[in-house]
Image (cartoon, rainbow, N blue to C red; front, top):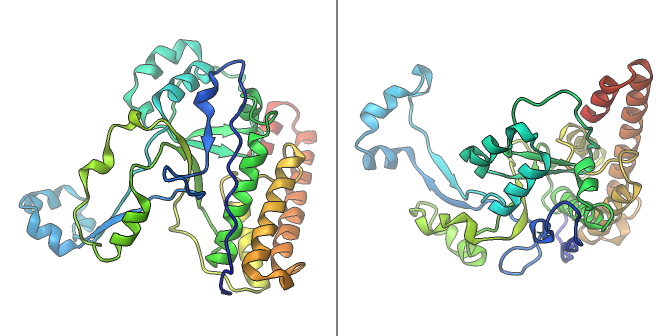
Length: 332
């Protein structure tokens, strides 16, 4: 892949203005780390634990291994990753009060599982009001679709557009700086990292087998910020700088969860902001002489692909009126 000449700073979404249904500090969304550098956070690799070391240091392995399935008792190495902190507790409580059915709220507030709350911003899914009564509610992997963003004022105040621009920059870096298709990557809102990232990166290469510091997992409620995290790279594939690579990126875009905005789905300025940010980064990474080539072909391919999806959804809506058609549209 061509060498990156410089990387533009990732855009920081504006702080939402006062909402009618939730206190404004709860949605003070940031894409910057605690150190102030503009970046998407990603879980850091803390250390690699070799299988031989685990067996020698854990005297209980002789009995523990029998608890695993018979075909999975062979010890293997383990990569110890940083845990993404949940969003602050006040935001968790606000989401329960806003979106949990009244008859389930007391149970939801008391459920410790809801303390592990990460928010998935779905700029490519409109979302619909459910008519059937809910029997359960969970904050784990809470879906923040465009319908909820509109209710919270995040579209009206421009936060959603800023988020779309951030996602465009992020995807362009993955495609043209890293040379991968971004298949099945996930973007979530979580809490602040408690790792000094610069210090950790400088030490990690020489201490891959070092023991993790327990201080990394300090009290979650002492870190009130809400930050964007990028995770799950186990399915990404390398791409070539040719049309085959572009097609690979288009397929990955289609198959990913609907984090990214889509043309013809939701407010048009979300897709416009995404495209502008994506191309601006791609041209810097690849060089101005690449204008009109591979990055543009990716955008054109996604637009054509999504146009077919939208037409199919419209045809299904006409054949299946009501809620069933809405479900078909949201699943595209």
